[in-house]
Image 1: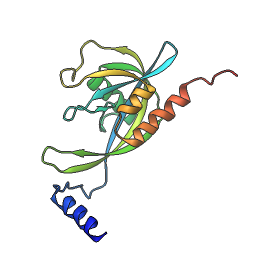
Image 2: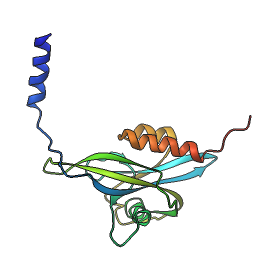
Image 3: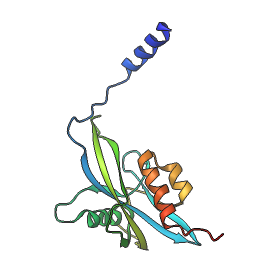
Length: 165
C-alpha cells in the first residue's frame, strides 16, 4: 500500500503548482440569458476568450453601475443580447481564473437572470467569442462549474410552469 501512495505523491509532485491568491475572492457579476422557444426554456452561453469553454457572460463589478446593470452590460458586450433583467440575483458561484502567467485568482460571481428580448447582429466582443442557445440539459452538460449548473437547473424549474395533472 505504501508503494501506491508514494507513486501517487511522486506523480503529484511533478505537476506544476498553481498559485491561488490568498486574498479574498474577486467580486464579479454575470448574466444568465434565457428565453422561451416553442414552450421550452433555452439558455444562451458564450465561449471564454482564452479556453473556449462555454460560460455565461460575466465580468468585474463596475463602480458607476449597480450589479444588475453591470451584468446587463456584460451580456451586451460578450453576447450581444438585450432584454429584461431581474433585479434580485438568482445565485452565485465561485471559480478559479488562471492568468497567462499561471497564477490562479478566485472569483465569486453574482448571477442575474436576463430574459432576452433581442440579439444584436454586431456587438463589441463578437470576434472574440461564439454564442449559442442551448436547451436546459445542453447548457447543464457544457458548463464546467458545478454551482453554476445548479443555478441553471434551479432557475429553469422556477420559470417552467407546472404540468397540469
